[in-house]
Image (cartoon, helix red, strand yellow):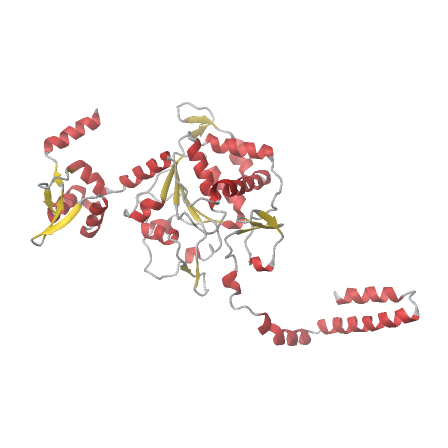
Length: 427
């Protein structure tokens, strides 16, 4: 910079009068002197040594990518809460980027194509809108809703294309994680999580199909969706803490069982069904004619990812920003309940072998109840402690009489009653 400045001053001296030349000569000498010093490594080292303590910020790394309202683009920053695009500033502390320029104009053709594609994946407008809102909520890094989403249905149903479009639209703000993170048993309390060391500031975390027979460990889900800071550590790196900003989406054709059922999981888990299968030649009622260009070209195109980001921003601003709860539609609520109930061995056992009468005379010893459950369920039976929790969650009252624990208002069904129930189900 000072070398260029010296060249400019030298050119300006040509043709200047004596007084101007004298003034320019002083500036030229000063510029040359500074340029020479800046070319001297020892001088630069000395300056750095003197001022580095003034410039040092011990929390610099800690501050990076911690502002939940900001999304970085190649040409600036979008403030999702203020609803405006602006130039980046040092105080933004951003290292992440979507990897492309923000478009300030709608591409109406791409807008229609994306909306048409989303609508084609569902038989319910409400479910389509709900998924779009769930995706849009991820733009804001403060996880207000604490939900965990499972996208499921037979293969070739659109869920993969939607996640791929989200991947291209979010850039650095979306990361994937191996399904084994959710299916392997939780590490001991307070242990660092290496798989999440590179997920700081990320807004969307996606995972794929777990191995057959593996169960989703609810302890891992609760840790990531509870809103608390987590401890992570990269390879050969020190420990650090951060608060997850990401929404979690598990995409699978077959939904794995849950390791246990707890109130926190019931409140947070959302199962979104993709009912159709896209075929070249539709044959069955749930088949639809597919458009190969969506998967092969459009979801990866600059047009679609720029416009999809605008769709998400508009959805957040108009439909999500002021919500206290992201209420699921009836179809999602029912599918989620059915899935959770299917993982509840105690509930299934109760429905088959017991009747809740709420009668004062209908009482069964707790030990007898558990023994019957354990013998009926076999290898997959819960521990006595977890069985008791599930009975209480099922609104079965428990109390003691003369030191003996009883479940109240419940009785075992007779064999005849069970046969009758089975016959009704068959009909």
